[in-house]
Length: 513
Image 1: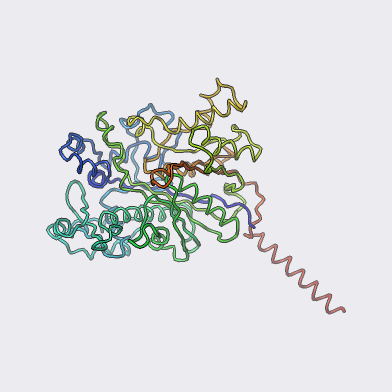
Image 2: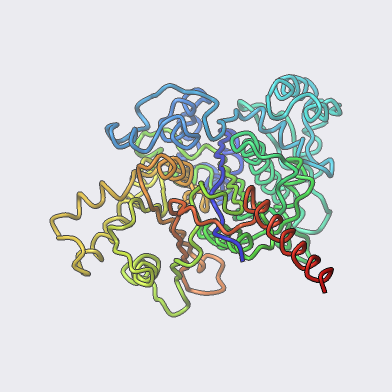
């Protein structure tokens, strides 16, 4: 077996989709069914942010790498009423406006389901043609649109298509892919195309930020929370291969992994294990975002006079490769597991995910420099009554440290500050689950500021009504110890030289007999 897989690159992207908040978020679509005349629906449009306001929102700039968690720490809470410099491009990715994202959805559509109004499509085509990672060739597909607004209306009103809006104006539609199969309804196809397009956007940025050639990627694992399939194999997949095709990863195959919010941690461990086993040398874990969670806590935000903060479709892609002797290693031998018998109490969950794997490795809680559990943005969760989710996790970890005699009770606040972080990730289920920190973790480890970080994924399996269990899995990311045993670079040359020398000696021995 080879050495540990290493964290080689990552990307984080957002698409700001305010009209999808109104028309596709389940809080709003449900309200429209059960209470169509509600005050909430009447007030909601007045709480929608502009693209520029979303761009200048500090947690969004942290997500794409222009700002850091430390910037959040030093900015007075709450953050939604403060603005920072709003840059579209960051070191890890970008924040894409809604109109371009609708165009990207059509680029990612291979079954002619997305229809855009002609003049809108033409304007978006010009923008995407100028996009450094999309360009003329990909954008050219938008030239096929011949639909008028009236044509789009007919699709929506008579053919069960899902409408697409921009700035409150009907600009397109997503058609159903089957007349009777609910798994291929227009509603599901829109959800899945949004997920695919946001994953593709992140994959394109991963190729740029990591510098890897698209042809080097051998396997892709998708870990979003959506499912694609038809009535005969609901959720059969495969988002991974579909996104890989659209992003030009022509030498890759792949599959989907699901685990609710814990999905990314499961997928990363699977990827790291495949690499350590020698099955593949280069694996990407990716996930797009989900329309259902747009405006999920909107009622509480509107009630408190806040803007709708859940207006972004998020995505990420993480590149793992065989050990290069430099990049941070994924320690697949130090893994925390929430087992069937673990239980649901917070203490039991944190014990299984944090203290048990550390005990097996002979490490203390304080030996981990940074913990990255559910990095939910408290700007979103606190007004909704869910509290500060990351802080709650850090306090529980610290409390176990007190119980184990590793820190004093009075040291809990300092432990939380030193080993924790403010949350900044959008509430897109799987998106906050440990992975938003991987970009900053890689930098900090490579620069020697920290040695070790723990990524913690937790999930609520009971939401699927198949079990009442919670879920969780964790692993350590560590500074590379330089003891790579993978066959790369000079190691490969050395092995070949040794084999050649052995063969010469063997041949000389035969000749002398």
